[in-house]
Length: 162
Image (cartoon, one colour):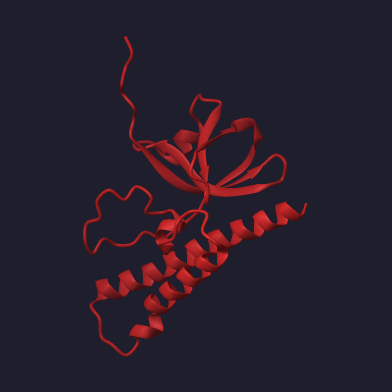
């Protein structure tokens, strides 16, 4: 008798350095109720990983992973409830672009959002603390998402030249 049970999973933004010296950034899939450490110490030989800009998950052998670092993308305080957003920490989602978008589109989306949420834009206005905090975290999330995609693009272009 086959079980239809599939545990709920959550993506964890990570940077992984592999044995061949390459570095990849993306989402490591973990059980929703387990920590990153629990996922890394599980009995399986492979980890499910989706690099940023790629739609399909890949499986990385634990033996080929040298280091794994969680990427700290600040959480936005909820001013309203968001439902059905499983990719809220994906840099593409944060910038409002599709994975695989041209670099010009990534940069244009970043500049538009950075101008909209820049702290100087609201310097002359008295805002409630929660709104100021929300705007500050949004600006940091936008900058972090852009930095992750910029690093990924730089690494991809370096790998293409090698």
